[in-house]
Image 1: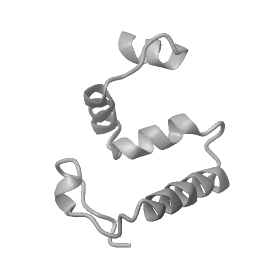
Image 2: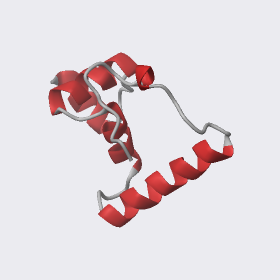
Image 3: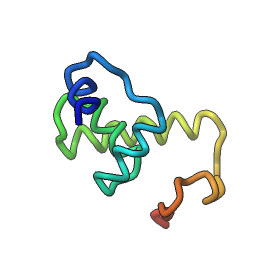
Image 4: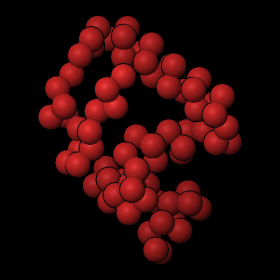
Length: 80
């Protein structure tokens, strides 16, 4: 928990491995942890705006589809 406390205080940056471990403990996808860290407040409108931006940026990159193999173990695509 000391590492989580340092992350919360901004004195430590988690590695991707630590981010995945934290997400696993929280029973959420790692992107959920990242999304929450980029929001000033966890309001549904702000979350939707963030996801809309990410979606537009992915589309601008020309990435139209991906393989489920890119997901973390145990994480299933949403089907949307």
